[in-house]
Image (tube, rainbow, N blue to C red):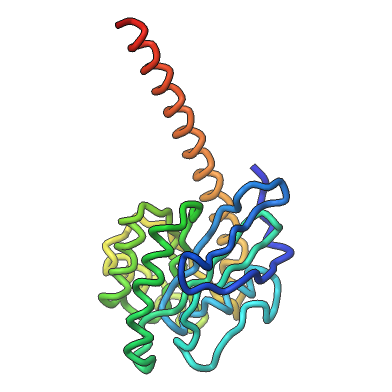
Length: 229
């Protein structure tokens, strides 16, 4: 499998519903696998994506948390797509706008067949609330692979970081989930996260190949059963 280097990042489009989702293809014409990036407002999604893409300013940041309520599509290496989901949970966002978040994101998780991985960003200084737990349950419900990215680790001490990590995992009931510490300020996680993403994409392709092989074998077995009758 080709290793993704996270170069040549490019913004593609913005969408608010499935009919506006783009069809993104690799240089060979295959549908690009997608990685969704999700988290609360002000968790640092834009900063992390710019850091990961080695492209300062590509993903626009806002001084007003929760202002952007749309789905933004990016590509890297002309082989892989990243989907920046709108941030949730900011109390000052109007109620009508907040109500749009759930259906918009749920539709994407449910309908986007080539979504392969979710990066769930969570501020290490916080503890999960009900909407955080609900989002993790959505990911599990739609059977998507996930990496929990604990952001802003530069804001806590080494001891606090270890203690908070344990508390967060326990609160999510996800002690065995894959997680990574990340700080754009201290360059923490910039090697670990690309490695984890590459491994997750490799496993996804292997699972797909196994599923295709099983489907093929089931078809052959079914043919023999009919012949024997």
